[in-house]
Length: 171
Image 1 (cartoon, rainbow, N blue to C red):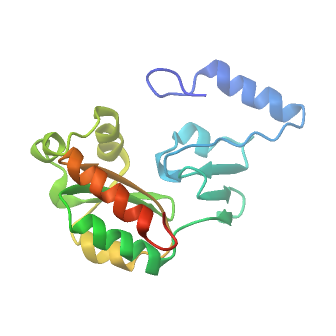
Image 2: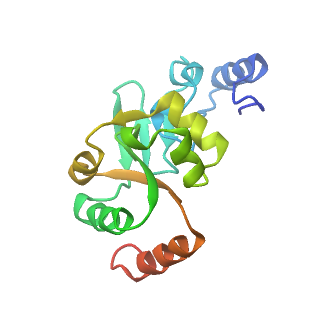
């Protein structure tokens, strides 16, 4: 649906409208949070439902409510945060349709230290809410949609995968 620059072309917008005129229900699906979807899609009059955060939620744009949520409950996400905060990580998480980032880690040095992909960095810079009290807000979040984590070392990434796979209700 998106072209190389990450935009929705006029041709695709016309196709969305043509499909709607034929009664086809188009549901954009994204690994991004709802707020990270292109505005032209979020405000499109022919699109009612949006699947976002890798399928963690489906929102009805008419009511503004999620009609499906498969999010991580607070007790479980806090165990994941415990693990991630014990390692050298750059964490963003998606909660209630928004990407939340640690305000203190949004620097060129941090991006380089954690080997962050350029495209992820651009998404964070454009859409994330920079939280100065990141740890407290993270532990308070009930219904985390997803985590995006970068590690300083491959060894910690592998250790994290092992620990997550051993966690009850996670792995």
